[in-house]
Amino acid sequence: MPPKVHLQGKRKGVFWMYGIGGLYAGKRMLLTPQKIVSMGRWKTNHIVFPEGTRAVSRFQCEVLVNDSGDILVRDSGSTYGTFLGDIRLGKQWVRVKSGDRISFGNEVFQFFYGNV
Image (spheres, rainbow, N blue to C red):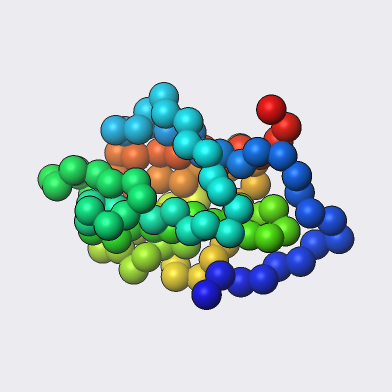
């Protein structure tokens, strides 16, 4: 169950991640609040990588925009690890800021929020 993190006010606007390296480079993906987006090689993920994609597990990581407008990321227990900068993520949700990057294998995604 996603954590309920309440701030003084809700962040409003549009939330997205942008592929800046790997198979999804140049792709902008909108994030819907309160919907977990899973990534990995398994076909039930929302963002699927082909079999044989370097250093991507079947269930790699998850991304969520919570009800307060925070972007949260966690590793799904992957073999290869999901990194926020140089820090390897665990199974606990971690808040990321607009402009932060996560990576695994050759895949790199950057997160943004704001008004469009």
